[in-house]
Length: 619
Image (cartoon, rainbow, N blue to C red; front, side, top):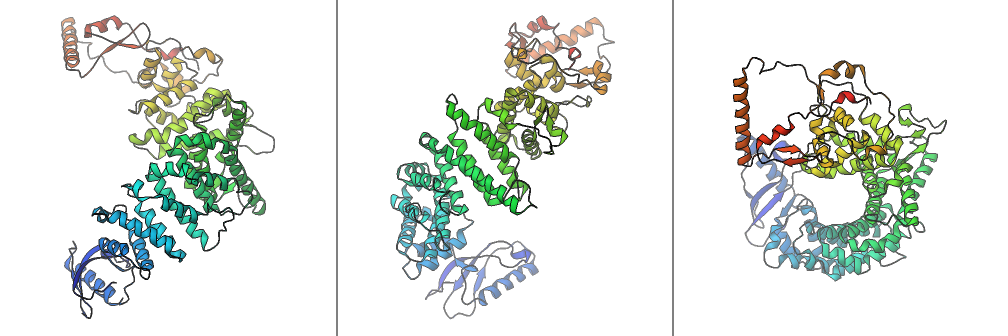
C-alpha cells in the first residue's frame, strides 16, 4: 500500500479474502494514513447487527496491520488515484502500477474517473509508451490486458486506438512475421494481443474498417492458409477465426474479398474431424466422433465466419453449389458430434444450424444418408431407408430451446434459425417432411386439451402461432402448414382454426378452400385417426381445436323479444367500440381475406359461414 510522506485521505477498496459472510463483498473504506502512525481510522457504513459489525472491523484491522508490505491484491488506492499514478508512472514503477490496475479493474466495465479532462487519452498514451519501450513481456502483456479492459467503454475508441497501437498489437500477435515462433514467452503475449484486438474491433466499427485496410486482415488470412504446414497453437487459431468473423460481420464489404477463402475454412473443419477420428483410434473408450472444448470453440468460430461469407452467395454457380453440398455433408457430421459438456455440444449445434439457414433448399437432402446394414441405427431414426439422426438432432435442439423458455423479446433470435432449417428441410425433401410430421404432428390422442396447451413440440409451436413476433409466427405457421401438406382441414385439426387464422388470412383461406400449393403434395396418406379422436370427433370445436363438452343454451328459455333485445345490446356495444377505435371488425371477402366493415350490421351477410368441418379429414 502506498504510504504518503504527509497525512492524506484515500478511499481504499478491500477485496474480500475471507469466507465470512459479513465480508463477502467489496467494502469502500476511508482510511487516514500517516507514516509511523500505529493506528488507522476507518469510517464506513454497514447494515449489520452491532456484534457482526465489530467482527468486520476487527477483521479489517487485522488484515491491514498484518500486511505491512500491503500487496496490491489486498489493499489498493482508489481507481482515480491509481489512474493518476499510472499516467505519470516512471520506468521503475510502471510495471507494478500496470499490474495493480489490471488486478483491480478486471470486473469493472465503466470508468467515470476517465471523464475528467484528458485523463482517458493520457492513460491510453501512457500504456502505449510503457508497452512500446518496456522489454519485460509481462509488463507488455499487462498493458494489453489494460486496453482490453478499457475498451469495454466505447467512448472515443476511434480516437484512442491509433495506428501506432494497431501496429504494436499486430507485432505481438505474430502477424508481421511468417517465421514467428510461439513459445512459453511469446504465446501468452500473442493471445492477449488477439483478445485485446477482438474487444476493440467489437466495440469500434472504425477500427474494424482500419484492420480490413491496413494489412491485419490480409495477414490473418495468410496465416490461416498456413495452418496445415506450421505448428500454430489452437488458441491462436481460435482468435484468428474470431477476428475473421468480427471483421466480416462489421464490414460486409470484406466478404467478397474473403469468399476465396471458403475452401480454406472448410479444410480447417475437415482437419479437425480427421484429428477427432484419429483420437478415437488411439482412445477407443471415446465416442466415434468426440471433440474437446477447445476444438469445439475453434469449430464454432470457423462456422460463424462461414456464415458471414455464405450470406447472399450465388447458388446458380455450379462450383458454388458443389461447395454448398460438401458443406452440408460436413455440417451433418458436426450435428452428430459430442463433446465434454452439454453446453458445448448445444453451442456447436447452434452454430451449425445458423450456417444451414444460408444454404439452398436443394442441399438439404444431403443431411440424410442411406441406412446400411450393421450400422446400428435406432429403429426410430430409420425412415424410408434413410438415416434421420441429423434431422432428429435438430428437432431435439428445438426442444431444448423450448425448455429454456426464451422471453418474447428474444424468441426471434433464439428460435427462428432452427425453425427455418426445419422448414427448408420439409419443403425440399419428402422423407424429411414425413419424418418431421410423424415427430411433430403424430396421430392425435389428446383431444381434451387445446393444441397450445402442453409440453410437446406441437403444443410449443402452436403457442407461437399467436406470438407478437410476427416473423417467427409466420415461420412456425408455414412449417406446420407444410407438414399438413398445405391442407386447410388438416391444419385446423392439428392447430385449431383460431390459432391458424393468421395464416389463413394471409393466404385467403379464411372461408376454407384449397391452397394453391396443396397440389404439390400427393393425395395418398395413411389414416391417422386414433380411437380417442374418433370417439370425440362429434364434439370437437374446430375453432379451439379440441373437444368441448356440450353446454346449455342460455337463449333456450328466452322469448323472441328478449333475444332481439340482447342482440341489439351486442350491436350497440360493438358499434361504440368501433367508433372509439378499440376494435375494427372484418368480414371474409370473396378472396378469402379479411375486409374491414363500416357498420356491424354488415356482419349479417356472413351469418351462414361456419369454419371448415374437421370431420371431412381422413388423414
